[in-house]
Length: 395
Image: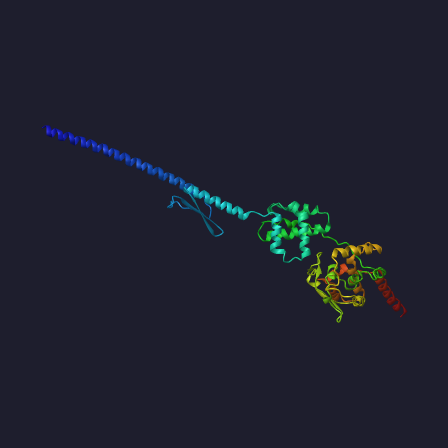
């Protein structure tokens, strides 16, 4: 009896233990499920955060790497970049920062000074002649960069550009500055650097050259009498009877003079350092006849070295200024001698195409600036016209 009672008691204890163990197992399973649900919900929340970022070219990998990090990627200009973080969120933030940083660098607009230098390098420096390049850089550095140099191109407006131009008091510099602004900023627009072109509304001023004149026959004779035996005599004869530009004459070498054919060939001009440079235009390279007065002076000249003359352009300008003042010709300068040659050709009835060629002009219309009507020429033509009418009245 005792044994049966003992067995029954053991069975009851086993049942109770089984119930306790079952309850414990159920609680553990319940807690585990709750934990999984929480983790799943958190992942869904995080996933929702990540999927809200809808930027083309950015993605994040939710699968953890072997090194314990998460990977995100962003693509710019066809190149894929990878970043990493301890969590998907961290990796994503790095990808966004990288994407924004690269785009900011890419779309950053140049300042006017930066674009001017780039414009010169890409489009102009190989086309411009040295003197023109020097003039462009001088005008930009003196008048444009102090006001516009640090401004972004996309911040410029037409009114600002016009104000800068209007404040330039020297007409020639104002014209050059206007040409630079229109060409430089328009190229920024057409090449996609800026979306609008503020230079389109600029009103440029046209610089009117100071009217130069030709010497009268009396002035020309006084000049020739005064320079007889002077060190500048041959040079002045070259200006008067060949019409060369100041620096073209100073670049002449004896090899450019063909005494047999009686021609002069212009191939170069010189700068202030006496370096040979290209002529002002393609038409500046030319061959023209040596007129008799100049031919006589060349025959009398002794040859020393390769060059006919060794002076710098600025020295010639100064010395001839002194000479013209001495002759009471304050409105005459070295360039007026070229005008005198052009006018002399016209008076002699030389055809326009030859006058244009010998002057080294690129267009026929340039002749109007250089050719003048001298009083004696007009008087002679008037007299001939009157004589024709007198002849008709007699018949």
